[in-house]
Length: 326
Ligand SMILES: Nc1ncnc2c1ncn2[C@@H]1O[C@H](COP(=O)(O)OP(=O)(O)OP(=O)(O)O)[C@@H](O)[C@H]1O
Ligand SMILES: [Mg+2]
Image 1 (spheres, rainbow, N blue to C red):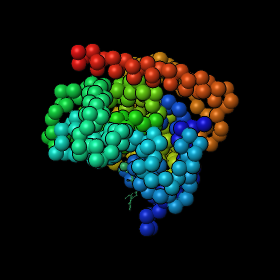
Image 2 (cartoon, protein in one colour; image 1 turned 180 degrees about the horizontal axis):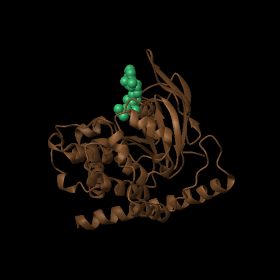
Image 3 (cartoon, rainbow, N blue to C red; image 1 turned 135 degrees about the vertical axis):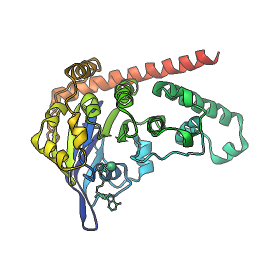
Image 4 (tube, protein in one colour; image 1 turned 180 degrees about the vertical axis):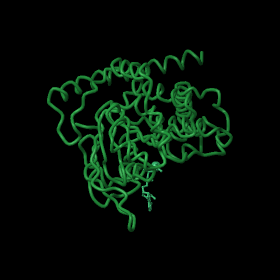
């Protein structure tokens, strides 16, 4: 069973058919790319998946459950984490305050206890702060921990937004252009980070991205949208040279991005090694077909292993934080 499956997703804004019969899936532990020229409907698809828009037609399934009409806050509680194309952060607060705020849905005290400030509240606040610090370290943002968000560069804000989404402990993470505002080196580092985060938190990801080298390096599978419809799908290497995809990009504003698609062979080999090390099998059944039984059995074993690994990783973070404090 896929973590996320959308079928025949369609939405119209007045005279504009923004999405038409879009069908795709994201399997457990995959990083799937959603690419396409400007205005193709990528963010609209995210809005339909996360519940900000209600599609006119079609369905959204989360681990087999139909969640099409469910509002964003309920989807978030279920395990959907999301970052936005335009960063949404409290600019007058510090980095750590923003991260703590992002976690407050998991704070186990009510408004009144919060105002009074009981011992339980202080304990929960300490726990949230520890988790925030661990996330900052993981994202390489410890240096800006107490800086006000308003003064930070855009690339740093995108990373912090990723941290805020992670703070909600998502099962599937939807990232809308995480590398925007980053230079080539920063976005290369972001690729490393995404692969590391997947391993650390056993995450499944859906990634909207214009920076093609990043897509080819981290994505296991890619879907291409054009004028609201699915134009192509396949492994990144197949998509890169797909004639219709190339034509769609050259017709749009992303020609520059496409020129960078010929990632050096060394980089491609490294990416392949990363995938293998992460235990991911690159072959994938077409989106419409059901996964073969063998693959499902393998995934079930992997999920059990992943749960055990997650517990170990959490313990390690807790031990590290305790050691730092003493
Ligand atoms: N709320 C809305 N009302 C009217 N039109 C909308 C709305 N949201 C999106 N659109 C239109 O739908 C189309 C798809 O927009 P969308 O933002 O999904 O594109 P995108 O693929 O994310 O593009 P980009 O790469 O530029 O972010 C665009 O023509 C956009 O103007
Ligand atoms: Mg967009």
